[in-house]
Length: 333
Image 1 (cartoon, one colour):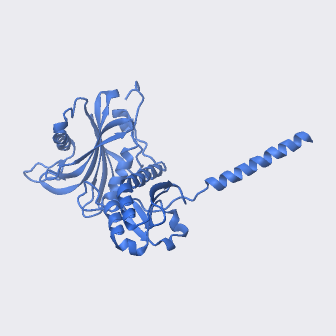
Image 2 (tube, helix red, strand yellow):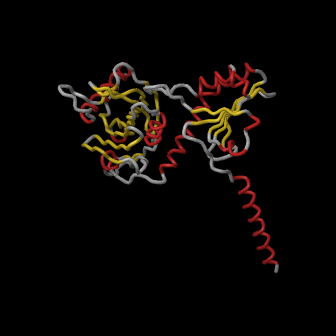
Image 3 (cartoon, helix red, strand yellow):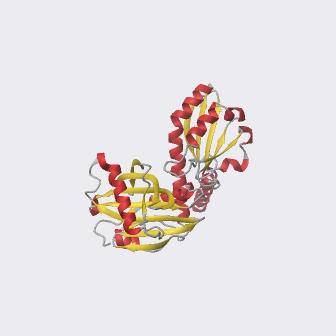
């Protein structure tokens, strides 16, 4: 009897613990279109300088695009309407005049995954200062979450081809809708159809000694891309003219430091075009120092979609490239 009582007590405690855990951890799945956000702010404040400041940060043009497209598509809502399912939006910015002066980011308040940027101030000026001070950090938090959410969606149906592993000793989580289109000794091209065009991934490697001089980095990157374009990415047939992909000569690409899959390198954003032919679009290139394999590993995504928005397609390519994993040292390619 004593033993049975002890077991009953343990069982009851386990049930209570389980119930408490569920109450604490259960959250609905977040909702929202890719790269969209809700701004919760009083209507009058949205129409004034606060709204202007928010738009200047969160709806700033995406770098390296052929036409202006905002970082985020914004829906504004007054605080009194911030109820129900709208709270489950994945990215939320809450801005208000308040008795507190603060700016921070909260995680999974109403749903998961979710980030809520909270910006308050006791005066309009304090709110504006907090927006300027915290906007970049909130943007990074929103974008990182969007990347992770996209990568989780890829897991539902992955491309099983092993060409990248066989040729370069790497893996990328690529949705099954993408197919290998071209492969050479040092070049793989994978793409999929999108509205009015294609989303493309190319992978190749360069000698480890490449890009050793900072003063010529931009020039060397452009020369590399143009050389690979001339060799592997031809344009349409035009009588008497050579056509191939190159870096748009009228616009210098943007370059940022980065780290992907444990490899440091640079992120390059800019415009590509076709030499001697009216065709162009955005590209995103990662050039990574792979000392383990004595090379520079190059991953690139580019979008061809005339007269349509390209932000989300390029973002998907970014999410794919950021899933990079190297084979362990000593593994045969």
